Image 1 (spheres, rainbow, N blue to C red):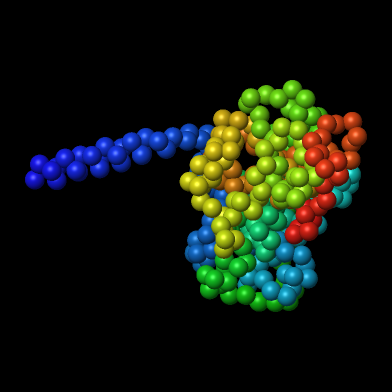
Image 2: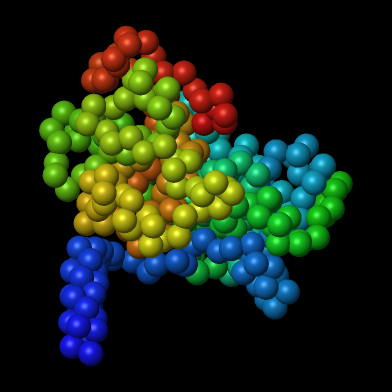
Length: 306
């Protein structure tokens, strides 16, 4: 009996030690409000009035989309001046949302078929223009997850009843400029982190000095769904990206970076910025510093061109 009690005591002490080794991560924001599972999305669709947005290209949407969805593609919320995939102006975003039946009060569920990146980019765009975070969510795993959950799909065009959408003033606190990134590259602050979310091949050909590299696909599980906030809250601090720091993220044109943005936001991080000009702006400026081991400019990723 004494041996059993002693063994239990040792096991309990060992468990306490292990628990103590996991540092509690304090985050400034609400956790888990931005991303939902396909099952949760289907429950919302059944029980609430929501607008479902498919962010595939129009041709792909017409081939296969969730029943009842409207289509807002990447080109509907971006502009190609001065660089590809830059944030569109207020009027274009208002039209794209309003023409698809989205009002300022609408609850919006967003999905894609592209590693969660296009859904995240629309979510970020709406965040910049003032849509309430509790009224918009990205469906983890997108189209494939919805198929696995037994959702009903259809094909063809769609009709939406247009409404008025009035965007708020652009939230510049969510957007990093080249000048801000340059200041950090030249005079690094301990309270700021630059995050490069491109592929290893891209980064090996060029990176902003001082940037930490975490490929955006590392935010996804093998099935294409996002990792939960608990995982993100361990993984990013292990790579020196903690919630107390300002995180400026970019990729080739900052479509993929929006995916990393929402993952961190969903995990409670709040001091987040997207460098919208991204590597394509940075690499085209001969006056800014670059870490380029091979001496060659980085090429866009073949997987998404973002």
